[in-house]
Length: 603
Ligand SMILES: Cc1cc2nc3c(=O)[nH]c(=O)nc-3n(C[C@H](O)[C@H](O)[C@H](O)COP(=O)(O)O)c2cc1C
Ligand code: SF4
Image (cartoon, rainbow, N blue to C red; front, top):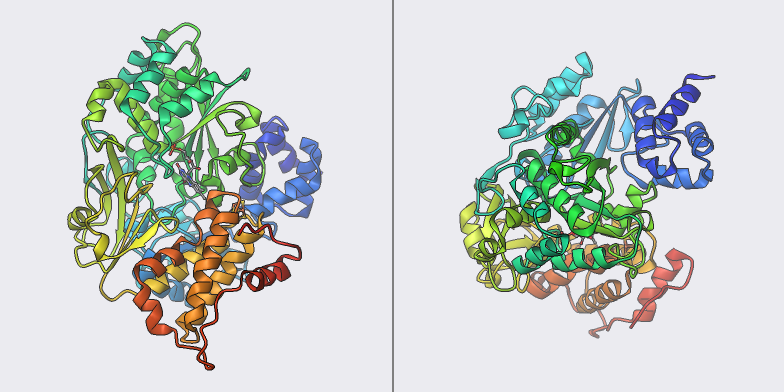
């Protein structure tokens, strides 16, 4: 048998030849051989008794997997808007010059690959890159030159870390230069908490009482959509199923969001406690932490936290001595796909499939992981649960507003003096937030990441809460010299790159939107192009299957609404002097041409 045959066999056996472990199998083969080539795909398909095409479709879906060989070291330079504002192009040029390759290429000796990737969760210390799993922050062109010089000597990314960041970043199992940058610790997430206390209190009452406490706290999900957590748990508990699952969404791919990284680094015990309490409440025995591939450097540390919890009886059989309540947690690594943050796509990925979103209903609480009722919650949501069960819902309710109880973690980055993590009370105004971060001169603020909204100074009096300016945590600030249309363009590139491609409006509509925006930015636009953008944007929102497509036109729609003069200054009246109105049919026929079939468009 060849080395590849032996290796793939070993990997598949270690994963029990279980097709639902496909992500782990492919990851391990990729790590061992630098690619998952045609032969490896054949071997995996045979070992797990799965059609070859299904294995191949997983390999080709995720950015971190590759059929073509990659270098021993892969440099992934972040290309999000904040990194661009902080000069990532200069670091990119230094890498191009020193390696003699461009993005998507590997040095002729096969040693180093260079890639340009969307947000890696380090916007507060941009420009940043991942070198294999090792994060490298505050890049400059000089730093990039040094990195290449050093790598050519030892090819060991870990040796690039000369000093460690704060807190657990210095833990022997993390050893990272990343900094937490916790600028404002608040009353819930970063307040003291006694390890094990919340679980003991929860297990001392019935599951229904736990759910009632979470409902009384009025906790709403912190991942973006703000669904009431207690209600979600109640649905799941009531759903029929021999088994139930708790899934923690640590995919954190929304550009500008990095709060969950800090929570996993500094408050992992609270996250796992929240998952355990959810397990007790819904009747689950297993939890899965879906950790984005970009945070792989935290995995060994998180596994250790889990091991210690098992050791201390906080996980495993009869948790804290409670007879009949068994619960454990495993970590599922992602592999570089933003859409996997969408809960049904996340479930697909955990099942070893492409990260395709599923149709809803049924909702995960009815039919989720492997068809069993499942609860999916954000990392911060689980931290809140732990605090609620430790101190009681009334204490939690003292914070925030009527519709948005508690505090919110904000990840602030961009043109500001103190980027980082702020735990604020819901109801704080955007202007106050800008003051905290030293960004009072912002001409625009992206609230809620690219899928949120770009607002201007007239909105700085608005409140951060679910009923006004909602955000999963991302706040990106733009100073006086910035061009909001460039930001919108960058965000459209992101959505095009990250669309799973399933539905035409999202796959094709976003390309058409970006092209029309480019025409305007190049001074070739006419007034009717603004109507075109508005109407096509609304169509893409209405006709897309999942949240990615339904929010992807927001960069254009919100800049049109809030920064219209910038567009109007660029568009000119067409030569015949007529204002051409948007023609849906024409726009869709463009889309149909590209898609090769009729689009499902609702007017
Ligand atoms: C494209 C897309 C990406 C998402 N990414 C995340 C994410 O990284 N983390 C997260 O918690 N929720 C994310 N969500 C929202 C999840 O679908 C889901 O609503 C959330 O995990 C539920 O948890 P919560 O109720 O605690 O907020 C995303 C949604 C979409 C449409
Ligand atoms: S909206 Fe976009 S990301 Fe969502 S299913 Fe359709 S193509 Fe995929």
